[in-house]
Length: 399
Image 1 (spheres, helix red, strand yellow):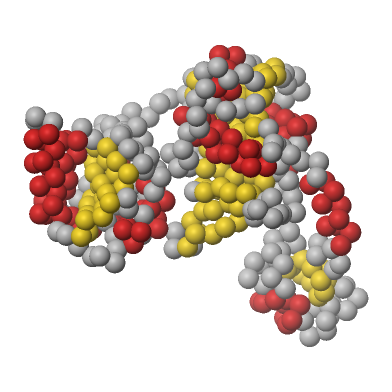
Image 2 (tube, one colour):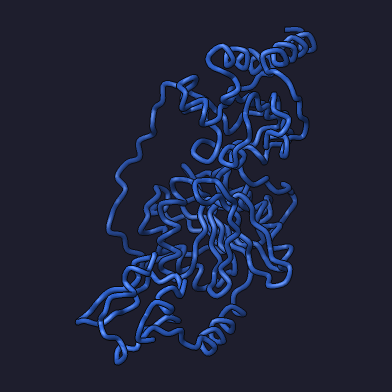
């Protein structure tokens, strides 16, 4: 622990307790102690009247850590499967992983649990160099305990420098357990992944403080560097039907689980809005003004053969249901064309749609942040522009 209390100097005055913003200082038998919640802000050092709290030398610890880091290489992707088929987010992660691996001069590994060899071959065609496959029936239905133990064992054996997984309900459920077992860091819901040119560390970018800023997070002293990525944020890689790679069959004889999955029940929804797979999305924000504005947006979406999206502001106003919401607290989409009507472009919304192939922004405010990410921008009233677009598209499509 870099911050420690010299017990012989501590008088138990408790001055340090109120200074710690992380509640990382506790009292035991009249003496202060630093626990695992310490974030090394060093505030307690300056307030201790006895000088009992000090920062220790980390040179030997860091040297040992740097030696261990040299043993870690390659990029590993956890390929999630559902009903024996690799989930779409797995191919998106392979695209990001392939780019990172090429930049590091490393291999791209994938772990596939509960599927067959044909799915493993698909992962190779999407960019994986080596796939660790376990077709054991125990993994066909997702279980936190067994998946955590299996992935941890593979990581400990292969020592990848980077581990990526989808920020899906499955990934969010068990990847934190894996990170805890490995005693390393985890950055959730990343929107961008890059390699630092000098240190070769993974730069993990994600929204922070309610989406008001974009934070770049590093894990320089521990390995592997772990991150989860929301579906539809990353682009799929290039599919090569002739690509070959290595498939390694693995078995886990000693895996134990405290729970057993008896059955899985799919949620049945009365409303089906397939934003994830839509090629054309027309989205409305606060500038739509209400149901009248969304009626125009719906007509444009129908003319394009697309679906309706919305910002959180429009959903909160009750103009459209939550199933249409795009953004940090909604769905992440990646259509060919995304038309933003009356959406200012708050970072929380941009997180969910900025990877669209083409973004068209319609807004009366020329300073709206949405224009910073738009491929094409139209400064004007959506109540005038949207009907004109709808009419022209219907003419071109003979509707």
